[in-house]
Amino acid sequence: MSSSSPISPVVDHLADLALWEAELAVDPGVDPLSMASSLLDRLRQVPDPRRLRGRRHPLLVILVLTACATLVVGNDSVAAIRQWAAGTPQDVLHRVGARFNPLLGRYAVPSERTFRRVLAGLDGDALDTATCGYAADVVRGDVPPPVVAVTEGPVEREQRRAAQRAVTHPVPGGLLPAAAVDGKLLHGTRTPTGQVFLVAAITHHGAVVLGQRQVPDKRGENAVIVDLLTPLDVAGMMLTLDALHTSKKTARLITEQLNAHYLLILKGNQPLAYQATRALLTGTDTEFAGSMSVTDDRGHGRTERRTLRVAPCDDSLFPGARQVFRLRRDTGGLDGVRTGKEIIHGIVSLSADLAGPEHLNHYARGHWCVENRLHWARDVTFHEDDSQLRTGTAPPLPFS
Image (cartoon, rainbow, N blue to C red; front, side, top):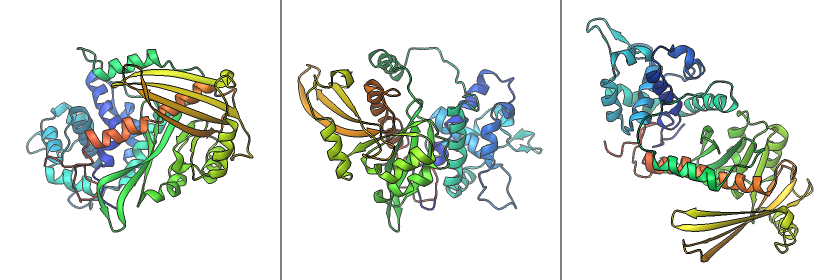
């Protein structure tokens, strides 16, 4: 990336490295190169920003140590990363390929200055391509996913919530693999033209980032969709996008070039399609009784009822379109009294025999993973909003 970003691709897209390290801890007898060859092969393609002369520590070792220190232990600064690396056992350093110092008779770790210089000078787009490519391999099933050891102890709150959601919101059968596409403003960034936006594609299930691209401003999000999605293998997947990305060009790209499917939100930027969709879906609930899905939710201090109705359409409405839908959200307090209402309209490229109302309701709800599991993690876990870092692509330093 050409401009500085406080959310480094180094700490944002290397979770699989940390999981690989956790798996090695469970079974030390497994050869790390044979287990993670796909990931290692991709990471080796990331260019090293340093000159060859005087280079002591391989770039791959620096990336592995950074990932483990950040994502397994929770360190969020270069100083903390180096401190964790300094205490890494010798057998772990041997497994990750650290440099052996013959004078001291032990494996050495990079200095804090080396960590800081390398992370700040990395080509963020090249690292994104490597890590997101590996993530896509895992999602497609080309390589086995890393396995994390199950630790003893009480069930975490998020695990309890996930179990509860599985009961209250059962997954309908026949769902396609889905990914959400959306942009995020990096508040701590500064460029000659303004602040930086990152547009990312993240899977609904597992929240795996398949790719991301940088744009100079929010108005450029739609223009970068082609560069973001074209390199990805999303054939047969459902892609969910908000109204900003609803355009005929994007619809044709997804259905014709990528052989995928879309769920797009319609608003005033597509007035003809929006008005036609409203006309197709106007009527009482009784009239749409056979093509409607209703779900109730309770939690986070509120209740919500989601009512989705669908109607068939064709290409004359939008390229590749097969159905339109209207989603109504009624929200209120835990006493059950409804105090808020929101209605959105959308269009999908799946026919009714492939996606019924309950499927579309699930896809629409799943789109929020980009907010809950990506944007929230950037803001809260990685302190993106608090960071004032202006050095290349180094990770945020809120406490350094």
